[in-house]
Structure formats: structure tokens, C-alpha cells
Image 1: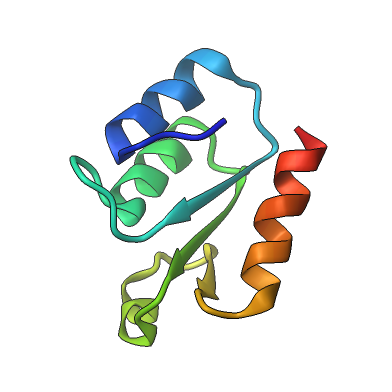
Image 2 (image 1 turned 45 degrees about the horizontal axis):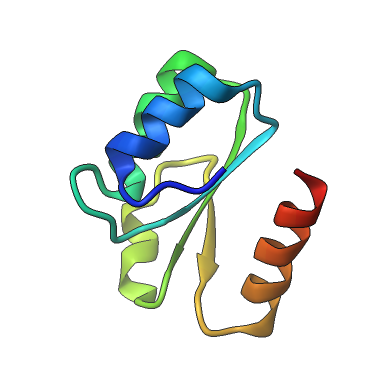
Length: 87
């Protein structure tokens, strides 16, 4: 499932699950990736989450236990493609 903003992502998580993992961009309108993931973790604390950003400085803002992915590497594109295929 894709969402254009953090609020839509949170709503999709609540209404269209179950999901096994969450992959989010850091910079999104309405709720950023961290805010959305924190809300999701309150609902389901055991879900695996990852947040991606093109700015390495954002890594320090990522909650403990949430993976940080640096955009711009081919691995990011492969992971996103693999998650789409698995859906």
C-alpha cells in the first residue's frame, strides 16, 4: 500500500492491514515518517519499521528499534521493489 502523506499512511495501516512491515520516507506532509511510525508502533509495537531519508543527519531522529535507510543507494530501490512484489 502506498500513501501520499503520513496521515494517509496511518489510516491505511489502521484500515487495510494486517501488514508485516512498514517502510516510510522521512519527509512527508501532514505527519512525517517518524510521527507516522511512532503512531503505528503504539498500535502494534512488534511491527518491523524502516524510515528512509536522503539526509544522513536525519538518522539521529529515528526512534530506537526502527531501521534507517539512506536513500540514493541501489539497495533502497531493490527493497522497495521487493516489498511491492511481496504484496
